Length: 124
Image (tube, rainbow, N blue to C red; front, side):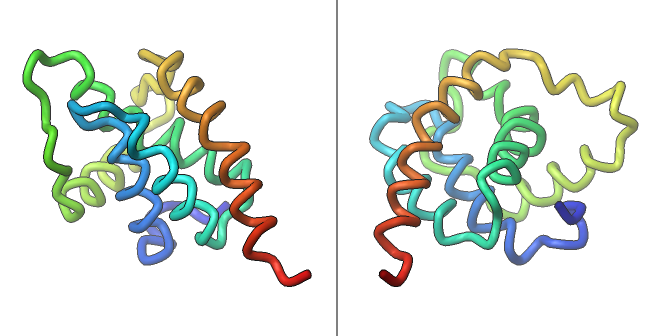
């Protein structure tokens, strides 16, 4: 997988779709849309999982802990710059594992939908 800094244009739609799962709303309404956006991306399933777990989740997990978090959408420029800034840190400073259960849960919902969407879109 290419580093995020070398692949911003392809990642932005995925970051935006996955970020909707971290809003202070019912994430279940966004799962279908996020899976469609992920399926339309050029990334393999393992790469999509890494983007969720190591790029989006660590940046947005804090929104899940505040009483009145962001509910109307994250600014895409802020999201991209924050993910890119974080990606330049040494791995031991990233703390990707915090609240990892939520990201794992999201991936269990997304993965089968992404597969199904790709099967439906692939030429027969």
